[in-house]
Length: 280
Ligand code: GLN
Image (cartoon, rainbow, N blue to C red; front, top):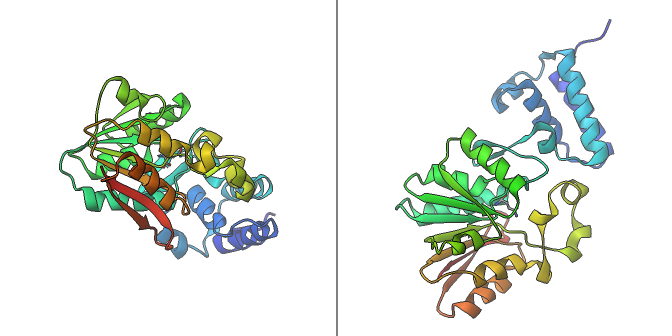
């Protein structure tokens, strides 16, 4: 007869297996919680409860797959939580990062909900555009992406979360400029990693996040240059997520085009430069 196993025991197994493969241990908790379909508090309250064999089997297979191949758990579960909401993700979009929640927090607290027009450039899974549309319901939110596959994911997320966002396919600001549309606020978390830094990334990132979403030419600055170059008269503010060493360079790009712009570099909770915000 097969021995029943409780949550605690199966997590212990997962932790050891993950450690042996140099993977993060907390993946076990996140995945098991996903398969049990319970909240974090219920999960911890039920540590000594036995688990159905089918759940144990599915969980173990996923842990082994993640440990051996580096596939992100979000590609196994198909979801990632961002700013308290579940977004569908797949290989066509960047998996949402916690740093981007700080970008949202910054906009929600500083921009206010005064009915402005916002565009999220390079929306990927749609997290920024959709979250802003839901947090700032008086705003008019647009989002662009060059990848039709990413837009498919973003549209599905907007529908699932009942967010009113207009999606446009095209390169950075191009689709808006094509119809001479000038938003009040441009937001973007564009690709910003230099190709030369590829070897510093974990296999979970470099083998599974779309390279279109990660890498940019010109030492990682090409997307910022493209967006800044195509800003139209009438656009008032721009807020970028940046790589932690890019604050000065992105500020300079903005200053080159708008010498009078007020530019701020804002740090994330780890003390790293993470946001560049400009009034132009
Ligand atoms: N805007 C999306 C995000 O922040 C996609 C970013 C990207 O693909 N570089 O996750």
